[in-house]
Length: 130
Image 1: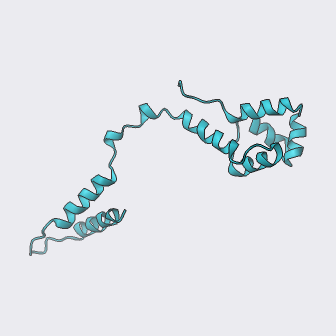
Image 2: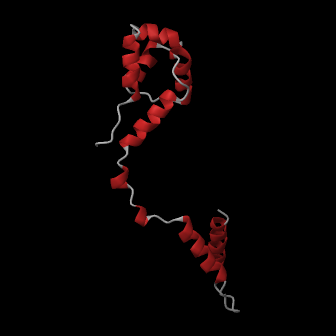
Image 3: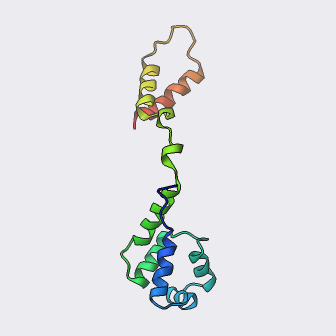
């Protein structure tokens, strides 16, 4: 994949090295177990909002800095162009058109209005409200 970004923990590892910190020292600064910090740096754990805020407080990085890097990295793992075929998706416009079609359909005077037809109309009306 051409568009894959570097994992955010790579940058964190460099930052720890620049500050001459060991994993043990860094874990004590974060008030975390050494094993948890080790898992973080080996990509076994992702950056969460709580971890982002903790890193923000301890490393003085901008708030949301690490979580946004994680989100960007996660999106880079997707190959959107190959996996996302928009032509096969049902859009809200299609659903509204179906709802209109069902609501304007005339029902015969006979007892042809079954429970299934009524259920379809109710579900279609739900989509019309969007």
